[in-house]
Length: 197
Image (cartoon, rainbow, N blue to C red):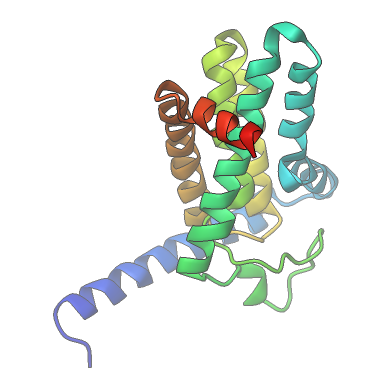
């Protein structure tokens, strides 16, 4: 039998689990349909390896006016991937919902990495926030794309809602970290050291 803080911790985990599974059940019961079954895998592919954001970055890199912003987008993707995929997922080690349910037909290949946080969501919100700072008039589009990618991860049953919520929060924090690095001149110092090697 658990005592004190152990019971409280287990109770919190139990409530999170109930919340997560309820939201996934609602999505399966009320949102799942043949049209979204086609659309959601396409949307999630946009987030695979940050594909949509890499395409945006290369588009910016090709325009001399926006070259620096394109570089910042790529830096943001690298930092968000390191934080999400490289650090947090391996600390938390949460198993994906699709690994617990046998009767679900996955519409994409089963991911092999851990579930928490959603890497697609983290990188998408990090880059969307960075792009929104530079192109404020298009922020609704950037955040809309990030939100669609996040929702696709729930619809496809490869993440829990709290994975996605954590991805959003960490993504926004990651974008702030990128601006702190840029404002502190750390990126320029890294480039100088890199070129001297």
